[in-house]
Structures are given as C-alpha cells and as structure tokens.
Amino acid sequence: MKKRSLLILLSALAVIALVLILLLPGGEKAPVSARNAENFGTLLGDLVNAYENPAEGDRQTIETDLKRIRSVSRRDYQLAKSVADHWENVFLDEDYPLYLYQGDPLAPELAEAGIPDSSDHAIVVLGYELEDGQMQPELVGRCETAAAAARAYPRTIVICTGGATGDNNPEHNTEAGLIKDYLVEKGGIEASRIYTDEDAMTTAENAVNTFRIMQENGVHSMTIVTSVYHMRWGQALYHLLAELYSREQDYDIRSIANYCYDVEPSVEMYRAGDRIAAFQMAGILELPNDVIRSLPSFFPTEGPETPDSPDAAPTPDGQ
Image 1 (cartoon, rainbow, N blue to C red):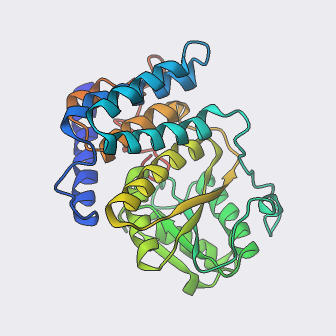
Image 2: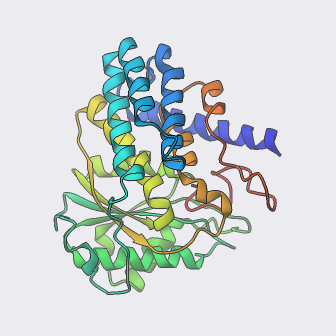
C-alpha cells in the first residue's frame, strides 16, 4: 500500500510540475534553486511543527530556516519569507477569521470582509469527490455556500473547479460541471458568470488551473469557498501560486476573503490538512522527491485502510 501510495503521489507531483512548466514563463527553471531545496523542505516541516506543537514550534527555528535560505539566495528568501508569513497568518494566528455560512441567501457573514462587487473579483469554489458520478452532501453544502456569496456580490465571476472523480462514474461527470449546474438551476446564478476547470484532481491543480482562468479574465482578487477544515490548506496553496505568478509573470492576484461550509471531515486523513498542504506546496515548488518524502506524513497511523493518497478518492476535489 505504501509503495503504491508513493507512486501515485509522485505521479501527481509530476503533473503539477508539467502544468507549471506550461503556465509559468521560465518554467524550465524550478521555483527554488537546487541548493535551497533541502532548506525549503526543512522550513515546510518546521511550519507544520509550529502549527501542531505550539509549545515546541519555536518561531526562532523558522527564523533560522529563513536565514539559511537567504544565505544561499535572496530571491529564494523572498519566496520563503512570504510563505512563512502567510502560514503564520493562516495557521498560527488564533484570530485568523474564518467566515462560516449560516444559511442566509445573501451571505451577511461576508459584510466586513471587504469583497469588491466587481468582475475583477472571483469566487472560487473548490470541489469534493463525487460518488457514483453525483455530488455528495458536502459538495452540495459548498454549492449553497458559494451561491450565497455569488448572490451577495452579483458582479463577480464564479470559478468552479474539480475533475471527473470517484469510482463508478461512467459518464465522467465532473465536480466543476455539477457545481455549475447546481448554481444555475438551484442557486439562481447566471451561467454567463460561471467558469469551470474540469481537469483538476487535486487542490494544487485547482490553484494552477483557476489562476490561469483568473488571468485570462483580468481578475486580481478572489474569495475561496470550501469546507472549513480545508480552508487553511487551500489558502496556503493559492497564496504560493499568487507569489509565483507575481514574480514570474508580474501578475498579482490576492485572496481577500474566505467563505466556509461548516462540516467535519469525513476522512480522518483530512484532519492533517497542514501536512497535506506542506506536501502539495513542495510539489508546486518542484522540490526533489527525497526532500518531499522527508516531510511529516499525513497518513493515519491507526484505524481503517486509508485512500492511496491525498489525491485519491475520496477527496475534496482530490485534496
């Protein structure tokens, strides 16, 4: 199981790397210099530890990691510092606001979030694995959450993301396609506002593909919609892509707010979202396989058999 899991994970990383090569100018050059790859892996591991063990996760350790990276490359340091600062804001700050959908049709919870009602802003809806080709209740909840946000900000665009996931899906229904159908038919959202990414199988691929859609449509800010346990994980990946777009393409996209469907994870592994985020960030950064394998494992040590990978079923869009 573990060997097969590793092969699946490495295959997923190869896909992410290929997409980055196609999308980012200079993609033939890894985002991080080879001499700093191990240092970045250490930083990601220490960020995970700082979240999981606040008493032991000494911030000075992270500062030491950053100084080590800076001694090799100031360019790498700028990226590492941005990643560390954002991780501290999203994962380590107890006051980081998570806006929870409460069932109101016009998302009053977002009133103080500063979301612009403009086509320059995107509401990005992350998918969840299909069952027998249909949406599970959690994905319906994300759709209701997204519909409330879209109705509250009628000039924004909506991006639905997620490919043809799950077993027993002979018609190859996609998460994104079903989300769009739900938003139009039951959410009252105009189809012309909605864009779809029907290829992504992981949260990392969600980020890569939705950034392409946002750039094509002149979008410079976003609100991410997903389940509450998935939000920090998603924010970390989207922030990393934003940094890469800014420095590789001089195109800025920032996350202004989040809107969460309040639900507990149905798969135990998803409680380790910080670890999966670090793993997928390492993939986006194209760190070597041995560095990626050194990161904290996200597989449960006890309990029933788990999915082959965080990119295997059942996953929230292949988290």
